[in-house]
Length: 164
Image (tube, rainbow, N blue to C red; front, side, top):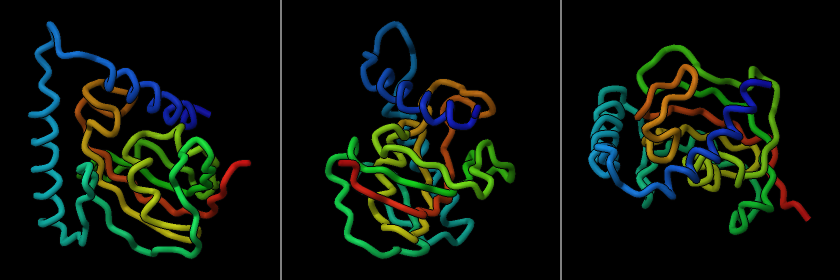
């Protein structure tokens, strides 16, 4: 139950971060994004990961594309059922996992990094996402996840459907 709360909190936090204006806070989102991107590129190279960078800055490695032709245009009407593991990039321990029990979400409920990455695959697909902190939890710590953490998720898409 606590793990599901993390995902619901992610969407709210992302909305808050997107609506915040740079003010008295000394946080520089652009500098953090550049630092995250550099760290991801270094990690990819050091670990021989065959990842691509999408236009938003999320890195992804499609392990299996899956089958189907679901259109992800209206994220509020796309239901995804997933098995996943999530860790802070470079860590060997998971901060979250479905533990082999598929979980179902509306795509729009998930962190922006997932909303960007999942549409690269279809049902039966598997993807690894390396998500800059901006598209994850941002500059706020959340449980075992430190502020400004690059997230490393492996996601198996067991089902995807359009909600009527």
